[in-house]
Length: 275
Ligand code: C2E
Ligand code: CA
Ligand code: CA
Ligand code: CA
Image 1 (tube, protein in one colour):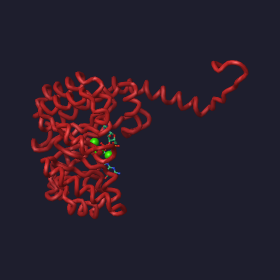
Image 2 (tube, rainbow, N blue to C red):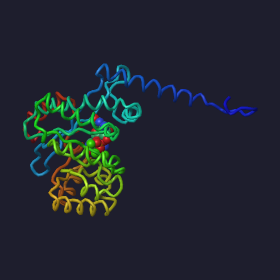
Image 3 (cartoon, rainbow, N blue to C red):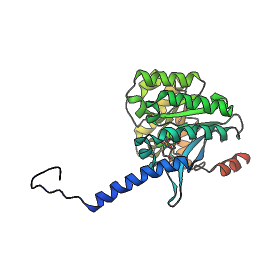
Image 4 (spheres, protein in one colour):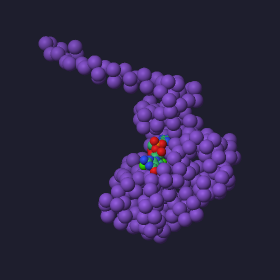
């Protein structure tokens, strides 16, 4: 109508129902925050040579009342749009520190941070500080995973926030390494202690010789800079031995374990490494 005159627009019923679905999802996410419907699953990260668990990554799931357990891709984008991710992120930090207390104290817990959380640095820093204080967890056992998307802007504010988080003693992990741009400069500019190589390199080890060359080169750089390297998405024994041959010493993937609910994680960690 706004187009005026004698113009007509086609408004497909499909479009209408998509918009409706989006609006419903947004409202549902807010309700879910209040009802504590978000849960964390945990995927172990291993030292490949010894098969010792060095950390567990907390991965968010939505225990939806009618649709079942939803993966993060189904609701994180909407939560970022509405800023609900800020409150969800606070809940995750505390829950992750809680579970770390139930694990041997040489195992860390890694939490994914959304770039949106960095738009309100005081809230993020406050959430990390209070999660640590309320649980009494040693800061070095809290790893914060950050993707390159955040660093693209490279603003003074982001820089300062990362310095403060590292200054508190948490370990910063550069997540999904290799999916963005000019990654190498980030290692130099920001206080990271670990680089996590994206699954896309693991997937293409056998089809793309560049992948193995890159993993090998990054491992050498990381060694020179005293950074840890984790390779994600290891699904086969062949990939594992290829990765180990290239140099990285830590890995994560379905070959070793899928993300597990808390009870299953605790059970797995209480058994000998061969299980
Ligand atoms: P990510 O940080 O790269 O997490 C790794 C994803 O790869 C997880 O998917 C994990 O289940 C999956 N994965 C691990 N090993 C394998 C493997 O061997 N094969 C395959 N095919 N997949 C594997 P998930 O749990 O669906 O998480 C997807 C993304 O959602 C994460 O990617 C992360 O970016 C985001 N995310 C998850 N939890 C949170 C959270 O608590 N907060 C925020 N802000 N983002 C989160
Ligand atoms: Ca991650
Ligand atoms: Ca990742
Ligand atoms: Ca990834």
